[in-house]
Length: 139
Image (tube, rainbow, N blue to C red):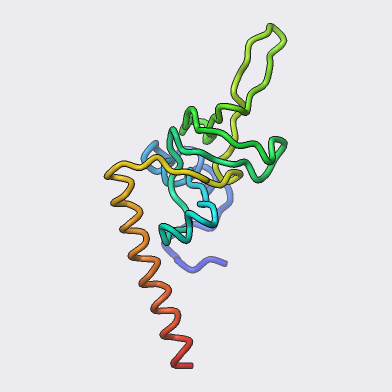
């Protein structure tokens, strides 16, 4: 259902917008959920995926595989994981592309920018939970 008259509801236009998004927008499109223990630790549901994160595949042909993210290919909308490979006919080994929505992040590569992003997101999530609890109590 469409809520905003300023936005289009056309499938064709929405697909075009999504598939021709610039790199800085694709970074936010390519987010992955955190594992249960990371959700509890960081009070955050999802994060943009990045190189050197450790992930577990939860959907698709490679379900159950774990490994470290080798590359994030924004143009193609996929990530490459170190232990998810395929042998070509000529003997070369290539990484299979996996969409970030099909994985769960099990370990994060931390630096100051990422820590700041997690704190910012956790603050918003805590405010949302407090607002939701306040609405339930008044009912």
